[in-house]
Image (cartoon, rainbow, N blue to C red; front, side, top):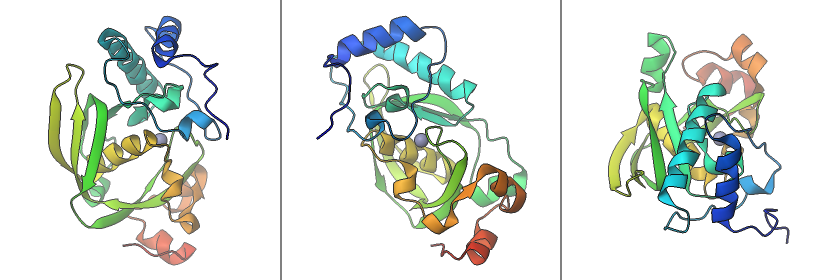
Length: 216
Ligand code: ZN
């Protein structure tokens, strides 16, 4: 079995080195094929100094804004810790916003997140910064009960729905080594260019008919 190549380094030392290197800016994104994206990230339980976790979060925010993206999980910058950031300015038309329940989401960090389905599944195109160039339809619960800690260690439980629920699920899945393509409807896969050209409708209904896949 191949294990993540951290050179045998403890997570605290790995995080310390990472923060030294990228403090004040963005970090390079790890792409699919790297074992760090397929491992189970460590629960944050005091093994890494809280101040360092906060600095990782700042680097994740900078990385998300630079990409730009609507979420980044720590494994995507090579850090196997259960930490991610989310935030969505939702630069879409009103028609798209309504169809996808995509409204602006203020930036926030999630530590040790988990979710439970709390609604019927819906299918929409999504992509991943670790797998650039493509998008595919993923069926996910439209709503979830999301739990996470903030940077002060306070536990939160919230019901999320629509696009924020989708982002929360996508980022939390990264922390257990899952990438959206694992759950995607493979016949829906499209390059970004073809998505723009043909499948930018508010919902993937036309794509499902033309490409031959079913939606929930
Ligand atoms: Zn992703």
